[in-house]
Length: 189
Picture (cartoon, rainbow, N blue to C red):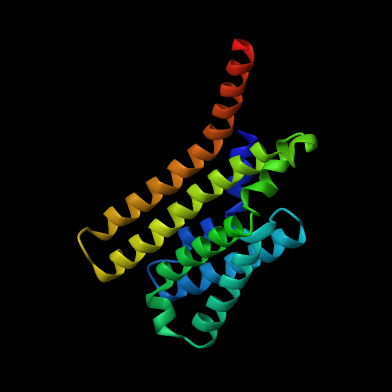
C-alpha cells in the first residue's frame, strides 16, 4: 500500500493538472501554475526524482510560458496530446537508456543488495514499459478526443482513466506476482 501511495505522490503534479486544468482558460493557467509549483517543491524536497521530475519541470515550464505568457492557442488546443506525449517520451527515453523511472521508486522498498540484479532491472523495465504504453495510448486518445472521432469526450476520459488505474494496479501486482512465483519455484526445488 505504501508503494501505491508513493506512486500517486510521484504523479501529484500531473494529477493536480489533470484535475484542475479543464473547462476554462483560467483553470488551465491555474492548473499549470500549481503543477509547476508542485514539481519544483517536490524536487527541492526530494519527494520527486528521476525522469518524471525532469519531464514535469520541462513540460509545465514550457506550457506555462506558452499558455500564460503568450496565450498560445495552439498549445491550449493540443494540451492533452502534449501532456500525454511528454510523459510517453520521457518514459520511453528512460527505457531506451535502461533507466526506467520506476527504478527510483522501487529502490525505496527493495533491499539494496538487489538493486543491481538483472531481475530487478528487468521488472522495472517491464513496469515502466507498461506505463509508457499507457501514456502513448492516452496521447492517441487525447488526439482522437480533440478531433471528435468515434466517441464522446466522456468515453475518451473514462478509457484514459481506466488505463492509468489499470497500470497503477499492475505496478503493485507484478512485483508481488514475481515474488510468489520465485517462492513457489524455490519450494518446488
